[in-house]
Length: 282
Image (cartoon, rainbow, N blue to C red; front, top):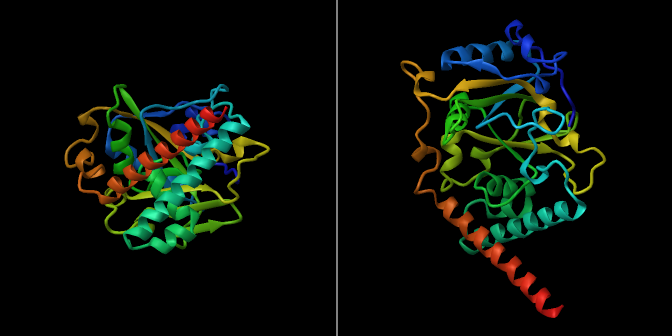
């Protein structure tokens, strides 16, 4: 993907090395209102980008000390050719199984799941079925803050802000920036409840491949505008604000979650069976 150079407010200059935000320290923020003001400054100063957010329990860094935001299928400091091949094979198996489930039950969107890879990947990624070339993001700052605090034992959580191209469709392909952006609310059928409460989006590179000359091109730290260390305490929200309840982020009545659990179990069993057959043959 194309790397961008963020324009940062004066307050955050000390938290970026030569304007490279991924190398600096997260900006500590103690209230939601203060964070909204910081993000408003980023939005104003980076007019060519649409802001997306990601909440994490901590600032994950590589061996060089740089914040890193890889899609799950590329995560690991050193990935062997076999590991990346196995991950893509699992992704293909899960995508195929998901399409079968949609077809068997005559579910809305069955043709999209079968024909559009990003639709299947989006569902599989959002429901944690397997590793995919897409990174979970949101346009809800409240949702990102909630995830940064969710089940987090640390004193602070991390909210990262990314600048992506403006979207034009439910699946936006931008060849100039080598990015694809998926709006989950538009690709998931109504029985998938989770994306609606999370205001979920996903993004990845357009030319997804098992072979790459430089893995850093796949890292979304190339699009990082800011990162904030928010106080992991109810006091952060202040009067009139609160995080999203966990029961809404992960609704129990979400039928898509149950279907994805089936996909995960069946693909895992099929892979195990193949492994056992190969072992017996050897």
